[in-house]
Length: 416
RNA sequence: GGACAGGUGGGUGAGCGGUUGAAACCGCCGGUCUCGAAAACCGGUAUGCCCGCAAGGGUAUCGAGGGUUCGAAUCCCUCCCUGUCCGCCA
Image (cartoon, chains in turn orange, blue):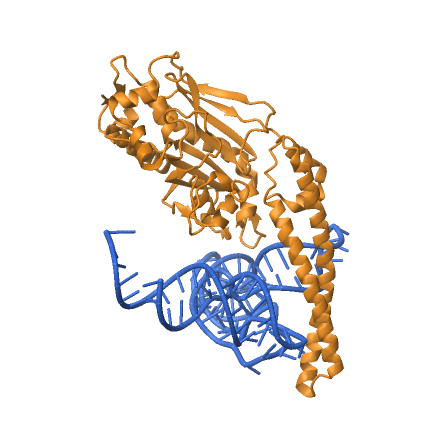
């Protein structure tokens, strides 16, 4: 949620920052928000005055009622006051409802250090020259992936992993969970895979992106990422654990990806259901830039252990998620398709999600609560990682070697 | 899915429709005492919004939303959630 006080205090800065997202309609949205905010404050002041009047009256009336009763004139006067208050209240309520509805559509302003062009920060490993087979061919030959049968069960975009493919998926999940819990200090979580509407609103998927997610007839939503349930673990809380606090969760992820047809439709690159291990961090506001770097490093470590050459880029202000203030993409090289595949997105949300989900911390005992900063990164997403893994570690005989870090989990050093 | 019982501050738990943001206890913070600690005692301990440079003031909040009333934590309605039993199941 956008910070209304900040918008009030420095409208020019907020507008300038949001303008960098490149959505011209935001100007009008902000105009409306500011007007409603002003109206709300005026009404609140008037209403509070009337209520103060009523409270004073109630005190003396209580005494009067005990000793002799209230005169009909007094009762009539009080009733009139009450009616005025009710009228103001309903007007105020309407404005607040509209204001909130509008405010929920305002995205997070990008941080000042976010560039206007995508910028490559660093890379690791030596990408193999483009060549070899794409992962869908390898996978089909090896019998580890069955896309046609997945389509038979659920439609296109729902893969079936078979045999060593299924084992590889399970191995990756366990490997990543172990790495992050044992070496990076995360607490493992297994959350619900269906969540309520207000939870989806807390992290920013709703109300704006309802078309992109799956909804059940009970008005529950299939999680598009573990970020949603895990970040909301602390919704409406003043976190009483030491910060920073990190959680890691494996969940399947469900995305409708409406309108995505035609792009990356081959193989595992863009699908409706996929597995992901997600990292979520909560920290004090001052710590979030350093936490963002640390978090990104945790995701990178996965790729290094898997011996997958990758690169890290900062996304430009007009090309990252609604709730994020800054995002790094981790892209693994996939020589078979000759593309860098986004396997992790690492974002800081500043206090945007904390504000929506009302997640606070108390800096010190007795001090005022303040909003935390939330961050998350895929650590990492499976299908594209599997694609990069198959294509990178493919051998001339058609087999695929398993990187040493993964061998104990897969139970073999070669998929053939 | 059916039948009951409940939802009060960080926790436990009081609260005849009337000056209740809300007793008490626990916890937490500070102080006294002590060489230090414990115990004991004293004091302080919610959050949002609005006005204000601040000090401070106003207002709201007893699951949520409506309603009755001059006045609601307390009465009525709807919804949500939790617990117990039954049914069904993994």
